Every structure is written in C-alpha cells, then in structure tokens.
Amino acid sequence: MKTDDEGRAGLLYGIGAYGMWGLVPLFWPLLKPAGAVEILAHRMVWSLAFVVVALLAVRRWGWIRELVRSPRKLGLITLAATVITVNWGVYIWSVNAGHVVEASLGYFINPLVTIALGVLLLKERLRAAQWVAVGVAATAVLVLSVGYGQPPWISLILAFSFGVYGLVKKKVNIGGLESLAAETAIQFLPALGYLLWLGSQSTATFGSEGAGHAGLLAATGVVTAVPLICFGAAAIRVPLSTLGLLQYLAPMFQFLLGVAYFHEAMPPERWAGFSLVWLALTILTWDALRTARRSRAQLAAAELAAAAAGADVVAPEAIAADAALVPADEPIDGARAGAEAVGGEARTSGVS
Image (cartoon, rainbow, N blue to C red; front, side, top):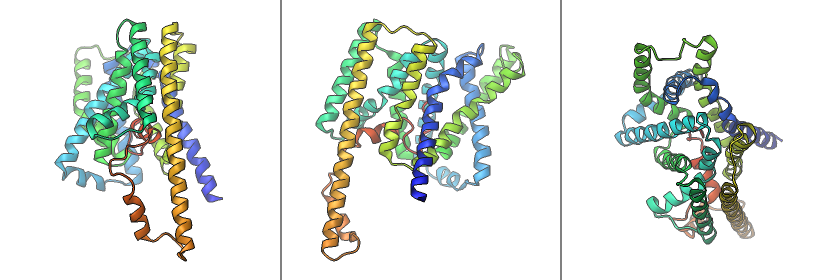
C-alpha cells in the first residue's frame, strides 16, 4: 500500500512539476514593461535567495565543501550556469516577443538533440529506431526552415543549450536544489551588478511600476525553484521511464498556449514540421518502452534461473555476469535521455 501511495504521490509531483513548466509562458508577460534581460537578472538573484532559504530549511550544506575542493566540478558548474543563462534568457525573450510555439518546439526536440549530442560528444551507439527518430526530426527542422524562411533559431538554441546543460549536469552529479544554488551563486554578482546599473540609470522597473510588479519580479525565484522541488520529489518515487513520458507535458502545454491563448499563427508548413517532430518522439518513446520491457524480461529470467538453482536471490556474481553482457557504451534510451535533459533527472534545474 505504501508503495502504491508513493507511486501516486510521485506521479502527482511529476505532473505538477511539468505542468508548472508548461504554464510558465503565462507568467513572463506579467512582468512587462521589464525587458527580458532585466527579468533574467531578477530570476537569478531571487532564485538564489529562495534556494538558500530552502537549503537552510533542510540543512544541506556538506556539498559546498566538496564542490569548492574540486576545480573540475567548479568549472563544470560555471559552464552549466553560462549555458542555462542563455537558455533562460532566450526563453523569456521568445515568450514576451510572441514566439511561444517556436519555444515549445525547442523542448519537443530536446530529447532528440540530447541523443545527437551523445553520438557526437560521447560516441554513443544508437539503435535503429533511434536513428530513424533523429532522421525524422532533422527532416522536420528542414520543413520548418522552409516555412519560416530561415532555420527555427529559437527552437535550436533552446534545444541545444538545454541539451548541453543536461550533459554537463550528468558530469557534475549533485542534487537539483544544490546545483541550482551553485549556478545562481555564480550568476548572482553579474545579475545584481546589472540591476544596480539599471537603477543608477533610472531605467529599472523594480519599484517604479508599483508593489505588485515588484512582487512579481521577486516571485521569479519561486517560479524557478518550486517546479524543481516537485520534480525532485517525483524523481525518487517514479521510474525514469515515467518521467520520460511526463516530460512532454511541458512543451505540449506551451504549444497549446501559443496556439489557443496567444493566437500565434500555425500555417500548414508549421503543422507539417510539428507533425514530423511528434512522429519522431513517438518512435523514440516506443523504442524506449520496448527496450525497458526487454530489460525487465531479462532480469526476471535471471531471477527465475537463480531461484531454480536454489538461490533465494540473484547472487552478486550472477548480476555481474549479466551486466557484463551489456555493452559499456550502450546508449541511454530515448525516454531516459529526454528525462535527463528536460528536467528528467533530480539534478536538472527546470525546463524554462
């Protein structure tokens, strides 16, 4: 019963996290007339403030000593902070400039971009279905490029920046809340300096647009951290394959908001491009679920064989022998890759 309750709670946490990330395009326009860079700077400053309070509540500080003692991890955190700065800034600008649909495309294709980065940078091998999915996605980008009259730069920047961010976070390997604290600590001084400069130029909107607007700018920290906390609660309660499926809620909500709420144009060529992307994701998800079922079947067979031999559990030697049959460079399956890149691991700091 406890396991079922945990699973249901994890599912609700996951839906809540991806639902909030999917509905966040409704929030950024509320911050106008602040520009995208000013909003971005406030997000960095207030996110650090909120995360520090959260860490004080849970009393988790031991990771700081380990991080400071590792120049390699510090370098990776700095790279992660730089890449997520680009991602956040482009996303905020695209929403407030009326490109919500194109921004949603970036997160639809992110799992596919992550797989491509795995091949290019990590020399991973793909299964046939994954190659087909990547090929269909590449075709979709070509179709959309024709439709837009240029490549969908917003989508590509968002997808590749978050894909690189996911790869870097895998190397750092610290918790999501701790990682967000470290990244925003690196972002804090430049962001605060920019806000102080805006104030000295009398162009800052914080305070000049009323208490409500100032409160909304301060709430950017909550908007950033709360979905991450919900995601972290989901990640320890549900399988990665489930998170891999839930991840599509965020771009789907964003897409629906762009079309139905913001009334962005969807000419036939854009529908064609999105349809190809959805086809690629369907192939990717089918392949991931099929691979997961096959892995579970192999594990069950190994357990039955061990039981038949008179063992109550699989001996460590049997587990090691079975693991040796799996290639060391076996690629991460699509659902897991997407989960790890689009907020699908407990160390990822949110979709947008």
